[in-house]
Amino acid sequence: EVQLVESGGGSVQPGGSLRLSCAASGFTFSSCEMNWVRQAPGKGPEWVSYIDSSGTPIYHADSVKGRFTISRDNAKNLVFLQMNSLRAEDTALYYCARDQPGRARGPFDMWGQGTMVTVSS
Amino acid sequence: DIQMTQSPSTLSASVGDRVTITCRASQSISSWLAWYQQKPGKAPKLLIYKASSLESGVPSRFSGSGSGTEFTLTISSLQPDDFATYYCQQYNTYSRTFGQGTKVEIK
View 1 (cartoon, rainbow over the protein chains, first blue to last red):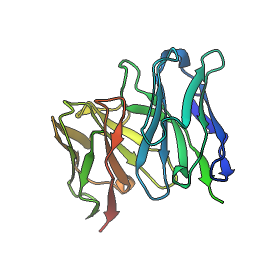
View 2 (cartoon, rainbow over the protein chains, first blue to last red):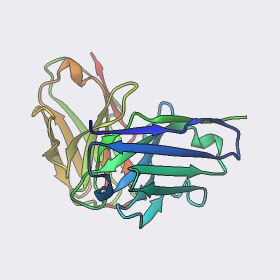
View 3 (tube, chains in turn yellow, purple):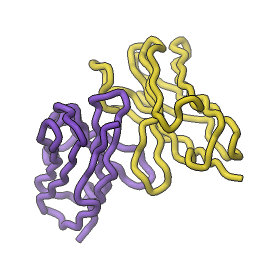
């Protein structure tokens, strides 16, 4: 089955860390550019991070630059988001999303179900 | 970052109505625009890419148009399954940005 499955979310205090994982199946993961996208409760989606199929280049939104790092393991069909120095405003549902194949920097044609991150004291 | 502005924020319509949603970019994005549909508790679903190309499996009542900074999503005859929130997204830059959304409600 073609799918993306996120895990690793949870509740954490401000200043804490979490590592999200996204497991891909049913397609040639190593050929696909991947992203993390988040959606705060009642808000629209916000792109967070991008990683090329080979692992570089990577890009992060200004709102998370210096705190979050995206990475991938093509041998295990996994993409990760290491989140450090978490803030209350990072509270959101975090989705893993695939760039539409065929063009670097495309729309997101496949999404996971999301994993919730709550930052609160 | 490129700012995306959608209008209206909320739209009340009836089954069978023709519905149009507008999206404006703060600078030219050529045709690098996508439209998504999102239902409560679900991930967004890609409907339209490259401003006017229909994603596989999406009903033909959905169509998109525009280029540069002005874009529209049209639903030719609204169906019960179409009541949802719609987002535009530019992908002209790696820093992909979304509009704030348009909620299509039952009139």
